[in-house]
Image (cartoon, rainbow, N blue to C red; front, side, top):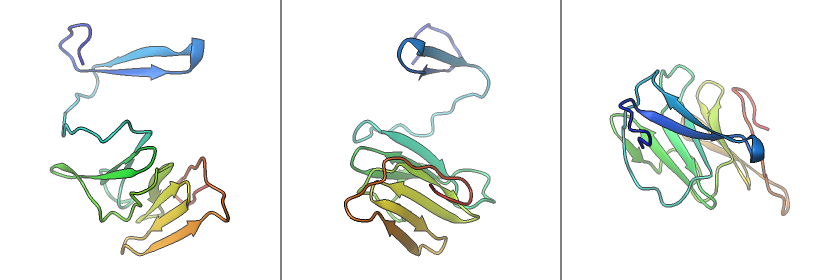
Length: 143
């Protein structure tokens, strides 16, 4: 949205918390290109972009997490919803990333989902009634 009637595209970001929070306006630099405009089924809690392989130049998926579900969008000539990514769509996603050279990892409240390049899935579920509340990953591990 162009709040101050400037010609250049702008991105508005709310940063920080409480009395230390700020509204920042990002201008110029890389030009913004709208690839897709589509209404979402709710307000997302988190958004991740993920490559299919470490050798890929660009991300292949946009993973959008909601309070009770995950939506996976495939990035290509168009951006469209996919159901064959291996990500579990019936749970919120706490973290989504490339693991190793060509595997995907989804951290969700019920555990971890390791999606191999050949679409085989390894699932680790939390014991008992415990749930995962936070998660992070790097190129080789998930915590």
